[in-house]
Image 1 (cartoon, rainbow, N blue to C red):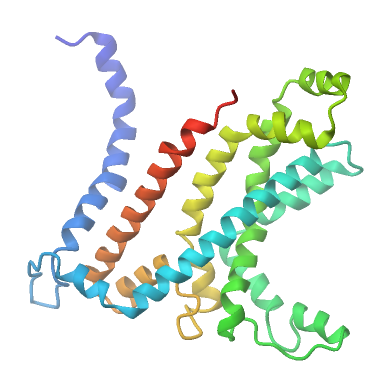
Image 2: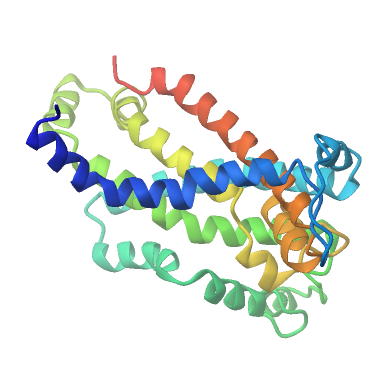
Length: 290
């Protein structure tokens, strides 16, 4: 017989459990099941095909292009945004003139909607009269189609992501820096330690739990980008900016191939699960100061 407190506890968490199951676990299960069937067409019901969708995905060159693009995007945006966020947090944690304004300037990109950010940068990248072409023109540079050139389209998307995410990660680093006991800095000054030595041996190790949290969010952000691609490039030119989530969006809502979209989603979930296991299993054991 359950106690009254147990019933009350279950009643309190029941709404959260229902939402978690309805919008997380159940969709994940149905997605895995859908990836084992064909896409229903009109009056034709879905047909079980097992792993044929995964075999077709293996032979899909666009999938490998999207996977390669996403890997480049992740390896570029994650360290750049994390390092930049840490540097900004260190800067605004000091007695900087106009510090509140600087903090607001760093954090402003985070508050802007994704679509608004994409349209702002779309103007910056516009050939001839865009911001970057106008700056190049001052130094004698010529016209360049930043988003229409396969060599610069993905780096342009990377620059937008770093600009938007760094300010968000800065907030967590700033909170961690302000939570550090000031006695550590005073003891370091008495011992004659340099600022670099104190940062490397004290500040950075104490920031490792925050760094792990930031890294987890940065990895998730690197594989969930679709808004900027839809507004700025539509995956072009020649799939140069096609990322995994955008390819899922195309399969599901442009080509109406729900079976292949489900297959891609399962692959993406497996990839994110593996990365999360590596982060918590490997890095999670090294985040605490010794």
